[in-house]
Length: 228
Image (tube, rainbow, N blue to C red; front, top):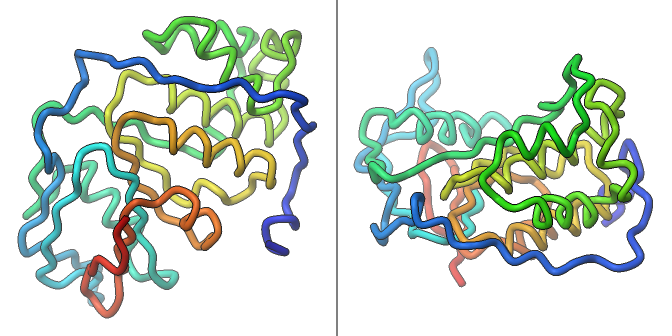
């Protein structure tokens, strides 16, 4: 909890958060119960074996945490899954949305709401609701993208990935560089999201709050250590 409070930028509190109900998007519905599967997956980087003949199956709609020490291969595994690397089998209907920290540090004068609406099939009230929950006032959603602070850009990027027509979200250490109120909203968004979420994190409170299944990478093996 102390580490959560020691964050770089603080967001104004929101008096009343709006309930987020993500609509069903038929075009990206997954009917495969195990849309991501690995069979004897080995990942080698230089002389280091990060994963050695590990098999796994990730269920549709689950919120899945991948944990392990720094350098154990968590981020590399996410990249291999996105790329459909050797031994990894993906449902042909998978559509990924990938979180990129500071993804909205752009030199654009377009209002942030306009920018987001150009990239989503969702209705404007849902996008506004997410922005509101993430601390943006009605006037602030019209700020030009190029004047966003680091914290604002991160919160806009979170809005972007949750409003994509996707069915699998990839979040690599999403709680880095965001404050406690934003983490709390992120937890709510993940729990409300209809699709699968694959994420890495060192924040045990965050993992406990959102993960259905927790997989650990340790000594080259990926093991399911808890499941709800």
